[in-house]
Length: 463
Image (cartoon, rainbow, N blue to C red; front, side):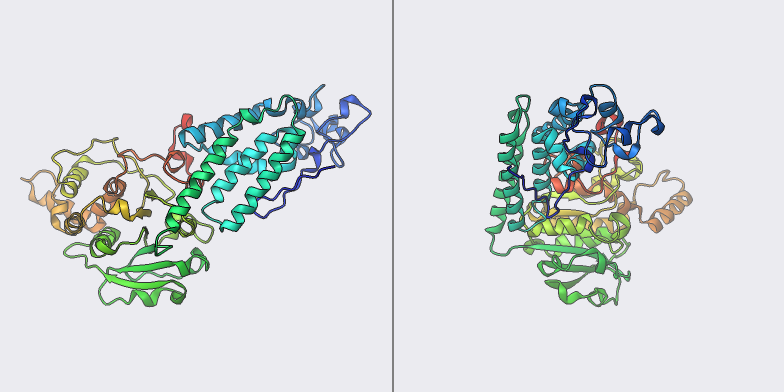
């Protein structure tokens, strides 16, 4: 009998013991629910209560589907609510680029029980495999992805052999999934044609912070392909000596950017880098703070290391915020309007509620997006955020004492650079209301599945 070979990301998945087809002389106790270790008596006996033995059940095999008369998930097959929901979510992703949290949760569960789910609904298992290949496509070496595609091909052949009359492979977005993989392959091929590849720089805003966290945050496979530039913002600092294992990076450079007359934290670092390196920018840059783990999480895997890895393997990301959280502070028109007008030279500014984005100014940026603005723009912006002019928004000009009090507090808290969190994505060509990464059709799938925070969404958006 033909045996299906399943290889998913190098992990050989095993069928859950209670999900294999078994034979029984009792019609009531036959079906896909029962196998060695999972019997009607050990799962449905009255002594286990009204919901049976909880150790027997998962999302598909439940007390209702297995213990009640005539129940068997295999009878419903792909028409069950579980697989129908998965199919609808997959269609929405391929057509609109929206990967809802429920989709991100479902496909790994299907893969974790691949054999059992394939037995019930072959196209659902195949669809989950395609999503996983796409998600890992920019993170793995080409030979690894080739092995996964060969595995998918074998499984697809097996699906044609075993499919029943109610299993319609054409009803599932399998071809859409394959087209997405072909599109990603073309993107990778285009990037590989460049003379210097990979061309990625990690830009780190630095003063005198401890950088030992870099040991656990960046993988040894990534570092040799990435240039590291530290923006030294404090006088008399040798930033390069603070980098652990600096010989592992492709190169390590230090750029000094002075915060004069006012300190502007990462804002002057980022703008100073873009101004000084404008004509020699790499193809992609990732901008981070010196306390990066506080914003994206400690250790690996993490979204910054994965993004560096993806860029190494040919991904193209015009712009994406990489932080965990959304900006939750209020758009204060008294402070934001002068900042907006000072940066963009505009006579008007957005209203409260018009701008929405991610917190904390960790982002990936392409050279093409950086060049949407002129070098003079970055020069003027750098001067503006470090000058008293950026704080000229204080109320009641006839009450000088109040102005000085407010100015002291705002300058001490460097409120201008805090407010810049609202504006980075706009500077680099994104819409005012930047969608959550999982709903942004321009981003590769791996960025949609990391650092998800559903607490910031409406309930309708995550259903």
